[in-house]
Every structure is written in C-alpha cells, then in structure tokens.
View 1 (cartoon, rainbow, N blue to C red):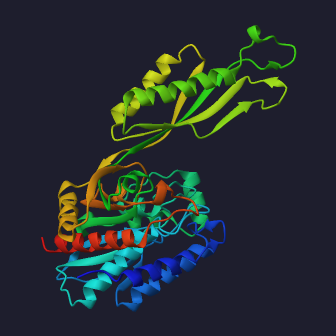
View 2 (view 1 turned 135 degrees about the horizontal axis):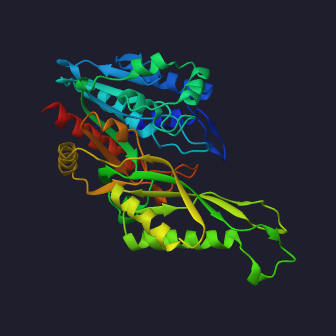
View 3 (view 1 turned 120 degrees about the vertical axis):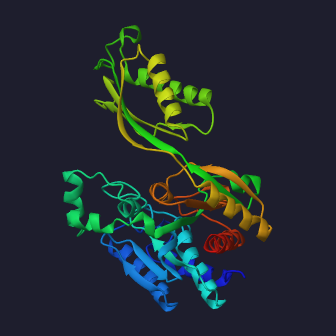
Amino acid sequence: MRINKERLKKHIIELSNIGYTKGQGITRQAFTPIYEEAKEYVKNLMEEIGLKVYEDAVGNLFGRLEGNNKNHAIIMGSHIDTVPNGGIFDGSLGVLGGIECIQTLMENNYTNQYSLEAAAFIGEEGTEVGGTFGSRCFTGEVDFNKEDFDYLETVGISKEDIKRAERNPKTVKNYLELHIEQGNILYTEEVSIGIVKGIVGIAQYKAEVKGKANHAGTTPMHLRDDALIKASKVINQINETVNQLGEPLVGTVGYIKAYPGAINVIPGKVEFTIELRDMSRDRVEAAIHLIKEECKDLDLSIEKLAYEWEVNLDQDTQDEIEKACKDLGYNYKFMYSGAGHDANPISKIAPTGMIFVPSKEGISHAPEEWTEWEDVDKGANTLLYTLINLDGE
C-alpha cells in the first residue's frame, strides 16, 4: 500500500496558489480572508473523501474517520498559515499528507481500529498572541492577558471559545506531524527521513547596554563611552559562549537599535535581542550566566522576554517511525528540531512523533523553499506506515 504521489502533489500545488504572489511567495496569515479561503479548500478535500468535518471554537479544522474505538483518535496534522512571503511546503505538507494517508486507507478498504483525524491548526506561524495559537488552545496551554483577549475579540474569539477548544487528552492516542526539516542536515547528508527526538526550547531576551551620548565631532576617541562599541563586544561574547558550550545550542542577535540614532551623535544606549535555542534549559541559563559574567564591566542588563520549554518526543512513537522506514527501505536519522511546531504543545498531552523530509539547501520561510516530490512521497508513505503501526497496537 502506498499513497497517491500525484494526487498529493496536485493538492499541495493547488493550496499553494491561495495567497501566492509571483516572485514573493505565499502570504496566508491566520484570521485573514486568504486564510479562510485556504481553510475552505482543505475542508472541501476532507468532505469529498467522506470525512466528518468539524471546526473548533478557535478555528482549528479537523476531518475525522471513525474507528472501532470511536473515542480514541490518532491525529495527523500541522498548519496551513504561512509567514509573510513564505514557501509551498511549510505546514501544508503535514495537513495534506494526513488527508492523503486517510484517503489511501479508505481506498484500500482498511478497517481502522482507532478514529483517524487530519488536522489544520490555526496560527502556528504567529499571531498577536504568539505562535502555535491553535495547538496551544487545543491542549489548554494558554496564558493570555487582557491585551491578548482584547485582540482575540477583534477576530471573533472569546474567553469561552478558548476554553471550549481544549481537547480532552484521553481522546487522543497519538499525534503525528509530517514536516519539512527547515534546516540543511537531511539535504546535505542525503538522508530521506528525519525522526525527531525532540524540539528545542526557545529563550528570548531583551538586552541593553548603556554609555554616554555626546557630540561625534568634539569628543576625542579616548574620552568616549560608546554604547555601540560595548554592545559589539557583548554580541561577540554571545557567539563565543554559544560555540564554547557546543551543539545543539545556537544563539542569535536578530534586532539591534542605537539611541539616539543620529549620524553625528555617539550612541548613549543600545538595545538588542538575544535568542538562545537548546534541548536543555540548564544550558540556556548557563549561557546567559556566562555572558553576564564576561560582560559585567560593559553596563549590560538582560531582561527575559519569553521562553518556550524544550520537549522530548515519545520514544515508542519514534520506534514506530523507525520501523516504518525500515519496512519501506528508506534511510533515516534521529535528530532534533531547531524550530518550533504544533507538535510542541501537543506532545504535553499525547504521545507525539515528527517526521522530517529534506529542505533543499536548508531554505524555508522563503519563496525559494523546496522539497523534491520524491522526498514528499517518502515522507507521506512513512507517515502512512507509522499510522498503520500505531493503529494496530
């Protein structure tokens, strides 16, 4: 039994046309008319093959095939929203791959023991209240303030809707997510399938370095207290500390602003962000401690903005993915995900597995994002065989 490669390809291309602008990629953000159009397309696919289609109170979409064990479901899913100017496969592959797997089983008169669901979670790529919005509501992992709820009301979502969207964990047997890697490991190493062991934690900080603003023409170099010079030393130290502690820790300074920001004024203050990702909270905190220690004479202050804890995915589910790869004759490797996914919050309520396929040259979140159709086929078949393995338990 194999999935229909050409049909899946057709669905991926058709969905990619919704929100696409030539030369600029796909812009299909949650709570927009374009997103609703895409959701309607996916809904129609689900209905056409005879799935029971329903939408929860926050906009997560599900297509369900009842099994002998009606109250216990294996869910396959991801998201169909994109970043601005995004690519064709990110998220969509997991949603459409899930639908394709269920359709393949139905066409082969397969009798499923557990209910099977394909899911499209809303707002994975980020909204005014953060990323993985739909899957966090699905799991009840929400901590919204008044401003968050004020925004949600503008898109028609109330506090009661948030509560109603929470799924009873006892009804979920497993969650599976097929996704492009969004990195360059599988592509570089020519490996067909990545079996994800865990998803890194993401820590974000706001850093500030103080100096003294002064006239750029009348202040000699030896009398300056240039905040930007100090900040550059901190940024170099971040890079050195991350390299010192080693993989999988990564660190990024993605935003920087000097004040007052005039061409003829020595910067008196610099603000910048620090993002650290690792599979260990202790290592992240050790990195921040080392950075502070090495930069204690640079008038540095660091404020924590947000932290999404790392998760280790279910070992038994990883074993079933590995068995599927062996049965299909695909080469594979175990690896960590450096990006967040809907699998992150869902893993906290149900045994969860992720299947990666290669991204050409590691490019994602860009119009140039590409995965070869042969790799799409292998990923979807791995998902299919893993689903069958889990359904037979």
